[in-house]
Length: 395
Image (spheres, rainbow, N blue to C red):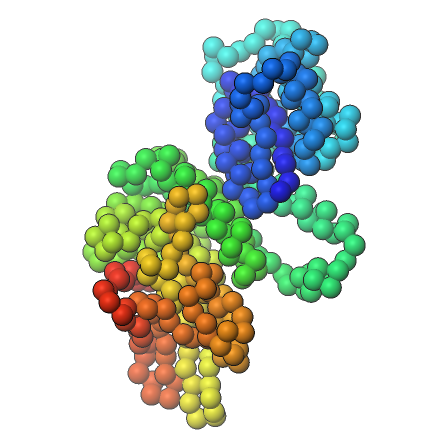
């Protein structure tokens, strides 16, 4: 577990600081350290914080328009923490607010502090590449991107091993996905919490299996996502009366899924599981055109759609991340007919043991090439009671 010390002023950056904290905590293998989490400590805050900086693996400094509270030594706490990172030669990632970053009139500091802050901003930007941002959503995305870039540099400098050499031959993809709260039944906090769990699932579970990653950005009700983002839209009603979720395109022609909270409740699916299900399937098959061909001889064959959650779709096979229910999914080995039963991990939860086998209540769409009968759904019934099947469609 690597430790990241998050340093910034509070009054002007409270939302950005929280967004960055949530983004870091959502990354597998990282723990974010910040002053407000220390609790009651019988030490001078200035000394205590700089000691934590000395212990961290990575230092992140977010510099806004305010200089902030002065330490007993004179300079502001953030400036002292930054200099401690420099002193201890800690790798540092610096983020600076853009010129259009809003600041309430009642937060404007004295002329002296404004001069101090101007000088500090110049100091942090000297000799390093900094990233600018204007919103909390941008801050969270850019922090995660910078951490991933830093990781890549560390891995490139590490002594190569057989595992790393093999991994270097695989070109991982990473997409930017905006999760929009357009529901009146869910608060922004509820959706934001779910996004944190979904980010953990993508980074920790899905990306290592499929070689496809994504950075998720929560978009609150009424706000707009960044351009060129894929979308997961959480809304009350669906355009299709029975559909819990369906795939379509954004106005920019990019992949999008829409989740109906109302229809999810009607079918017994937690909406978070539906969001997880279709997010992962969108990442694995963005244009809904990827299939797997299986042939036993030259005369027959079947096409399977690469829909990675359907074979293990029921709620019984889902799992929780930080109290949020997310969908199970199959691994690439599930689509490899040459695999012997039990020879690989076929799904994340370990509920199927061979290629193309369905968990009870799971389903798959296949096309019999010989008969030409079109796409047909195949479902394995549950042994006891029926599990609600997610009625989804592609638009």
